[in-house]
Image (cartoon, rainbow, N blue to C red):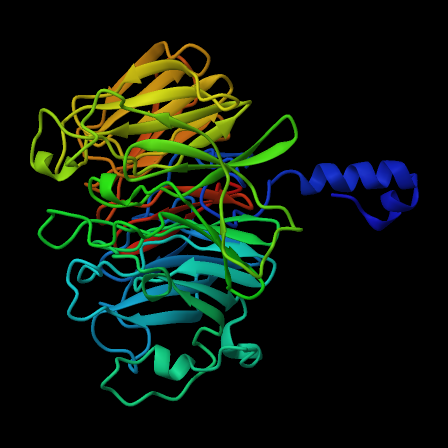
Length: 502
């Protein structure tokens, strides 16, 4: 430790360098799902634990109760941890019944700071699935939280909640958090402060399916949001074929600025659940978006000088068909066909060193049992290599780290693949279904399964299992590392895990 006496003997440059070294032990906050812009599932955090034990408290910083179903991934920013869940274990007796919930917890001890409570879309069972809660991860910038609610609303929230007053311009929080036929309840300091709200369904005519799921991409003054446009309740057609799959909002006002013009709707096999990524090619920022039709679209990112008075069409640069041999017309006749069907994409595209890495394949519930990891030249959409995953499905976003790719598939296999060539180095069968994504950090790869088993591997081309921990319930969200702490969300609990000093 630097004492006062020692500090007095240090030169200013030496002191600055020393403080940089000290502060660099832990990387930083994790304000969105995946690395900023690129969506790569990699963290620069160090000193993360190889194992932990909730029963003995080994390497456990704190454990917070969630609801009974949690599909969201936590984010960490400004001393707060935010995660979506349901209301089956109410934290506030004023809020009873099935709701979507975004919890804001204190990073130090997991205690509640505030919560966003959103009534369900009743009786629209297939638009807001019972007990699924808020599935979307938050995106945080400064004191602003951007989130897509279970009702398909893009919201800007105050990171401080109502504790510092109702900032507005939106001031109808009491009405919004209460079902329509109920009397609005009185606001408290543990309620969310909504700054503005944009209703995707009613504003652009989207037919949301099952649940809204979007990790908002923030670039400059704009928010890029996938719309969760999807199939009808009987899984036979797209009720909103002309609705956009990707929209752009002004982060300051919530006003619609732009939307795609690709007529993706009729080709959506199930729903639009993949969130956009961003990368620069020759200094030009591009937005990469995977549609529910199995095609990756690339757009020019909007500049700060873009026209915000009229809704624009985002300029398409190129598109890449991940599965060119799959059916393209009358796609819904292939529902329940496990041998032949269109592909769709639930994971996010990852931009890394001029390349895109994409997982895709038949739909997990309705399509063929086949999936791939693809590598594409981000300059021109040229496919560089293709690696077939298991004879099943894939929901996971890859981790590209030190020339290797780590990715999971729904059949429960972890794959380690050469990032340049697609050559496989190893696979491991966890024996459990996996929906989450891997996290590569501190020389390790972390991943959770739907049976509640949490695995740790060495981030190496030679397979090495570091540990396997059984947790309380299924794991659907991805592990997250921030400020020296690893966060793992099960259906029922959020674990903050930190390497002890012992």
